Amino acid sequence: MKKSGPFPAEEGDDGSFQRQEDAFREKLSTDGSTPWPVEKDRYHLYLSLACPWAHRAYLFLRFCGLQDWIGVTVVDPIRDEKGWAFREGDGFSNDPVNGFQYLSEAYEMSQPGYSGRVTVPALWCKKEKRIVNNSEDDLCFFFNKIFPGEKPDFFPANRAGEHQVLARKIYENVNNGVYRAGFATRQKPYEEAVLSLFKTLDEVEEQLSDGRPFLLGESQVEADWRLFCTLIRFDAVYVGHFKCNLRRIADYPKLSQYLSRLYKLPGVAETVRLDHIKNHYYKTHPELNPSQIVPLGPILSF
Image (cartoon, rainbow, N blue to C red):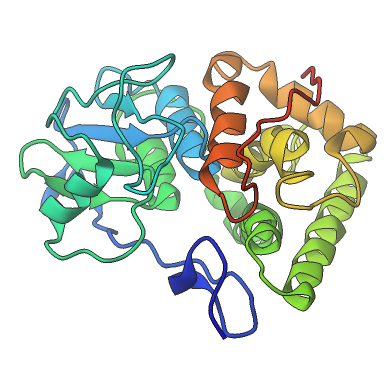
């Protein structure tokens, strides 16, 4: 049977979406244990403000005060048949580092013949002229734990076990869950993804009902921001575009308060571009939205 999803190489025979692995997973270090030392102005981060994975990496770069260490270039939120593009626009720009027109050029330069999907974020080494890492999980950890400076600890050692379990659950059922629902091409994997997604959201709603401000208590952890980057997009695009419509986040009192609490923290709101988000999703997946019409709503207030 011909595969009909947005990414045929990531579509299972049962119609399920099976996300590709990140292609670049080099480790940064301060002790010479890897070929990728932490140095000021050595690295540059390519990202999209539309993408939840890239959004989390960008938040961590800012939370950790690394704006003077690592440059940032935002791509056009509308990804065409050639992929993520560098163009001048509102909140995105041309590539000032390499003059690339498309992010695929960075992937090709880093791994000639690269045939996988080109994704954001991507951390570029200006000295070696290649992508070092395109895993937002790694980048968040590097920014928080490897780069120097005073910063919150989003990976507390004394909560490592429960944090890892929680983060994995949120990834599988929520972060990737919305994509497993939206990119499914058959009814069964779609329903399985949606039911797992809302089961987890229901559990988090119950968890927050004891009055805690964040997932593990009084202090933020990485899993809070992992969840935030999906929640902030949920009612705007995932409810309609990805058919995750059993409930909205607005229908969850505690999750809504939690989302607002995170959004109002210093430096967060300016990273949220609903125009980028809606234009990306509704204009990038013609298999899901052939007309490419972008809905005016919903009216949201965080």
